[in-house]
Image: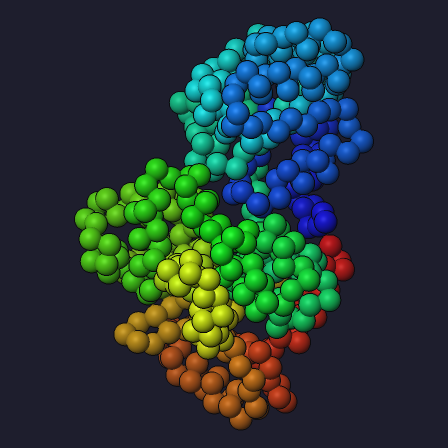
Length: 446
């Protein structure tokens, strides 16, 4: 099911309609929907799609030659066994005609033949740059694909565009899972994030059923997913898992993590930098401060997995799915609450909830916290988030507490409470019913 990639398709179409040869890099984490995006883009265009494998360079060249023979109608391509010559001959055949060539999972070719970027650079400089080629290099290894964009890369200065494909936000989740209640969509976001592959797997399951059947059950596709992704991206997955485990347990400062992992701060910082680059970990500062920030697991599914699955792997390996479910099910509501706060901040940053705000941050100080502080043109908006049903009196009491916490801040102030449900909503109050209405309206207008 192809949904919610208008921005990405618009980018590709814009580059397609530009004059001259195009060398585009598309990358992003595995399962995020890059292949489906590119196949959608290719519809109605003259071009070919090639999926690289980890088998051997010889096999890949043979398969690519077959694709080029089909694209051009020239059988002689099938006899070519050299990657560079394939593109030289292709350049001669297409000349100025606009033709798309998508090389998917390009990181496999880099692994099999480290000099492949230099070969491609030579082919581009000598043969392709004056043709109508629309060459797309697509890959799932973020680290490896980002190296193709770096200054030292042979392709530096040749690429004409690059796009990092990201998971869906809540609008895409709602579009991919039509008919779900807003409460259920928040739970989907909290556990699975916006990765299209995960959303497709759970399409016919409730979130709780999906956790039991697809995440906690040994052998199922999401059971070892984070371990699999880490092995693809990093050399020492054991150490990275230790860091992620520490974050999941609540060790959020550099000092706390260093004590938990036993790593010195210098080494730990390098591991955290890598996890940040992979967008698995984030770092946030309290509003108005430049130090004493906190690290957190940014990827929602990794966050869930390291909090609930990783600590119980020994039992799950023995097939004790029901026992582990009983153990963790009582903690899920609190987890949903924390992730609902994250979702609200994300919706404010993306202006899905639009009050004309600029930057959005959390704030904390000596045991006090404010879930979101948003900068307005004429002051600040303070937001409290509650994953619970509230009556009018309780809601007003919470807003009063929020005003008291905000007294330390100067200037004009506005206040907002967002809860699961609020009976008899007053000014400055929203609940899931309001949020759903906003999201559905945006989906319709989009």
